Image (cartoon, rainbow, N blue to C red; front, side, top):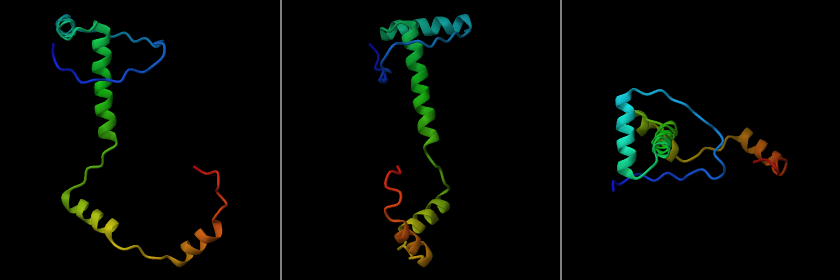
Length: 102
């Protein structure tokens, strides 16, 4: 068998349905790949789509900065903090007011 990346299946009943149109050559390639991995074609397509979803979600959660911008960002977050008198006073005054806030 081929090594495949694992996808955690969503639990529960599958109720959503999608149709797609394929070129015959693509359909044959999918059928062959599904058979080679021991999966039904629908499971193979679903797993492939979910792998792509994970890839897109990961890319959306990343920020890419040029080296100079990253170094400036790192310097800013590693620098010692400054007390802003008005903010410190407002924070102290509001303590306990937002107890249920998340």
